Length: 319
Image (cartoon, rainbow, N blue to C red; front, side):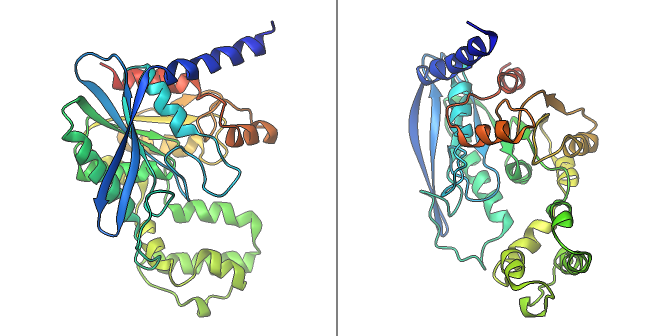
């Protein structure tokens, strides 16, 4: 049996063990204009109180399992992470974001603000803190959830905060970086102009934006601008300085969505070196930088979580 097959069997073994060492509880929390639904994964056979982690999802229509609703991106990252944490004696709560899957919201797009997601996380943290089974409450904020986790931890005291593939810059800077190679110089200047106004809290009527109609509808439609204004105000590196708790910054070396430089910027803000996990990509799985390897990580729900991630989390969470 070759080395690759042995490694694959070993990783599958981690998942199988995790599935046999946990039980699931449904969690429901009624909030204004939304009912949040999630799953609490509890280790079986634990004696005494145990730590619990709130897993805060990344951007887009990401459900509690870490899958992008309605797309081929079905990695099961958060579900697998919850199972693997349970095998280490760590409970976790993962949940469908406001307006996603089972957490349907009556809120309109015009009413939505970035802080709503942070407030949802804070409310769930408060719920976990009232559960006498838990010795401490931690946050794992993944991708966009990293900043949301910081904001939630500012509102609700937690035992520890973990940034997992979190951006270290304002979202406006990241969007500009992503758009630059895809648009003309004139279009880029117009995008910068609109971004600057939004950064300053000013709405820009979409009919006045000199960009192709399709791009305006995607980026700057009138109903989404209030949300962008609420998001653009936050600099993750400045916000993380405000936390009064233990902090761990984790970043995968083969992450093609968030860079090691972002993790370093977060680390520099608090005088801490980020932990770089070799071979881990954005959806928390082992992958090379080859497109086929990345695609497999995003679309194969059976690929296990990177073992180095579990080692780092256990070291930080378990006394």
